[in-house]
Every structure is written in C-alpha cells, then in structure tokens.
Image (cartoon, rainbow over all chains, first blue to last red; front, side, top):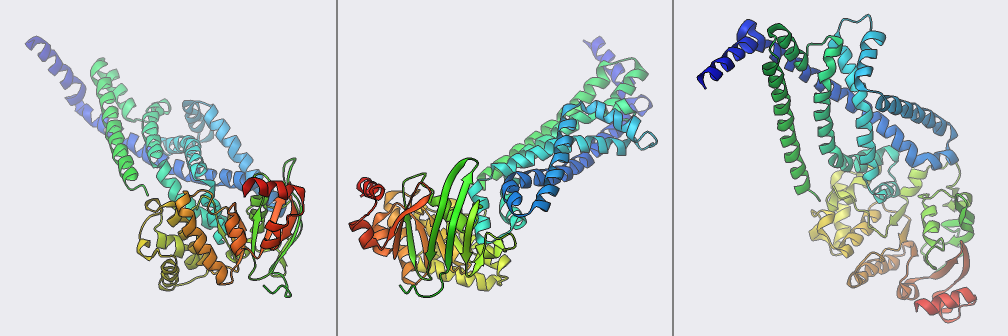
Length: 244
Length: 247
C-alpha cells in the first residue's frame, strides 16, 4: 500500500509539479475557455442573422412574391447563401474546417487563437442558427398574426412578440451548444494551439507518463461541463417556474 | 342602419387560392359604417379565409378590397396602417403570454400610435372596466379563463381605436358557460355603433344583433339578407339544408 502511494506521489510530482507543469494545464485551460467564449459569441451573432433571414423568407415568401419582387429576390438570394453555408458547415468535420482555416485561408497568420475562434465560431453559427430558427418556428403562428393584426410590421412583431418568447424556448439548448463547443475545441492542438488537451499531451511527451496528465485533462473538462449542466438545469427550472 | 353613404369596405370579385385549391371564388360585398355583418357557412366554405383577407392576413389572389376609398390589395397600399384601423379577434385569443393583460393592451398604442404610457394605460383601464376585468389588469393570460381571455383580446384590439372589428369565430374555442359573457361584450360593441364583421356559429347572435347575415358556401356568397328574412325565408336550397342542420 505504501509502495503504491509512493509511486503515485512520485508520478504526481513528475507530471504536475516538476518544471511547473501544472502551469501548462492552467494556461491550456485559459486558452480553451478563451476560444470557447469568443467562438460562442461569434456563433450566436451568425446564428441570429441566419435564423432571421431564413425564417423571414419562409414566413413571407408568398406575400413578398405577390407584392414586392425586388425584396423577394434579395431575400431569396441571401436565403440561398445561408443554405449553402449550413450545408457545407454541417456536412464536413470541424477538424477539417479548422485545418483549412489555419493552413489555407489564414496561412500567413501567426495568431492561432484568432483562427481557432473564427473556425469554431463559424462552425457553431450553423448549429445555433438552426436552434434559433426552430425556436422562432415553435412560436404559435397566432402570436405572429395577432402582432400583425394590431398593425406591427414584421420586424416589430419579431422584436416585441416573437423573439422574447423564442428566447425562453431556446436558452437551455443554447447553453448546451456552449458545452458541446467547449469539448470540440480540444482539437485545437491540430493547428498548434496549446489548449487544455494539448497541454496534457505536452506533459505526457515530456514525462513519458500518460495516465496522470490525460486523466487530469479529462477531469477538468468533466468538472466544467458538470458545472455548466448544473447551471443550465437551474436556469431551466427558473424559466419553467416563471412560465406564464 | 343608413346605407346611403359611401361603404367603409367594398369587396369586388375577391379570390383566394392555395395552390390549386380555390377557396374564394369571387366575393362581392359592400359594408356600411355601423353595420354588423354576420357571416355563416359550413366549415371549409371559405368564411374564415374571407375575413382574414380583409386585413390581409391572407393575400388575395384576385379582386379588390377597398377600405375608406383605398384599394388595400394594391402594392403601394400601407398594409400596416390599414391593419391598425381594423381590429381582429381570433378564435384562439392569441394574447401575448409573456405580457400582463395591461401590457398586452398598451404595447400597440404606445409603439404605433405613440401614446404615452399613462395615456395608453388610462384608455386600457377604461376598457377593462367596461368588460368587468379591471381587477385582472396585472394578471398574465395563463391566469385567465377562456372567456376572460377573449374579452381581453377584444379590448386589446379596441385600444387601437379601429374603425372596423373583425371576429373570427370568437366563441368557438370557449366552454359553453363562457360564450355568453363574450357575446355580451360584442353586443355592447354593436350598440356603440362599431362596424363589425363576425364569422360565427352563434345563430342567436346573428338573429339578435346582425344587421345583415351572409351565407358563404363553396367560396361565394350564396345568399344575404336581413336576419328576419334570412332565417324565416331562406331562398337557396343550400341555405335551407344548412339551417335545417344548425337550428
């Protein structure tokens, strides 16, 4: 027993304390959180724009066709672009997108973090767009008609009536997207970014001891995900309680 | 009812098709200010579609709708402004669930008519008082009964001070014991000389309040008349058989 403990202690010192290896994990975690945070913001921004274009087109197609051909054409054009974006992004692996972004599109850039934020944000935007769109579509058609019948235009109806109700519907799903994205960023090491996963791997390469650093990385991810899941659960309960 | 002035709504050869399905096949009607026009007909006859085209919730595929001398089916017409002048009450109430009763009633006047909060709320409270719901001003729609919801929906539309009120089967989603309170509000509205177009299955309401009853079947107006004649002496066979079923 003491022998086992001695070995455990030696391993721990080797992997985490020698040469301040724990700092690598901490810095890696910082990098992971940084990329995730800004990628989520970018994803939401892209998602909102695309969801509004797509649902506007779906809802007003007929009216516009009859009354305003120019706006219809413009909207149809943007809608087509959105569809191409969604198809390509959702149809290819995120790691391939990341590498294309880093080695092809931004081949001359040395700012790996920025490239990763862009790659993950653009990827996440496709999924967030569908979350928002399903949220908008989930709002009863009658709500929309009631807004319009009072004299609100399309945008006003969206702002005052549909979006506040949509937000409540999609908030939990949106938080889950954050959790998914957090784990997805673990592939950032592919393009030389020293995120949490990469930090664990670097320690392993130094110490030739795989167990401790990799398990430590797994535990850190798990802890963050569990924390967020708990927060989302709390949020969901709050939303349900205030359900009017 | 005086009918010598210019009609407030004039519908000419109104058509609406959903793909190949022709729901409205040429409706012609003139509605005078202060009239209560009750529209009845079998389900699927196009009566709700007709009502919804009047404020362009459905885009007509042919014909004209002239309101206050303006053809609202024209591309240049201001649809939003037109809808402000035409209140609509839905079968499913469609109150905004994330707002209190008072907010439901004041948001449109404040945002669209640029009324101050105090002004909009004063008007809303006055109307709520009239329909006996002043004490529910701070309640959320989910806390109201069906009849209360529909009464709020009616006064919400009235807050925009419309010239015409459209009712799309306003009592069809209600429990029977709540139908009366909603009809009572509508009767009061009729007594106040509001111009109303009402799609309903309440024949009693049609008889008592209607200035004219219109029978729509297969996308056209089959028959129209004053309530007494309409119910006592139906001319077309379709109407006779329809009345035999519902009365």
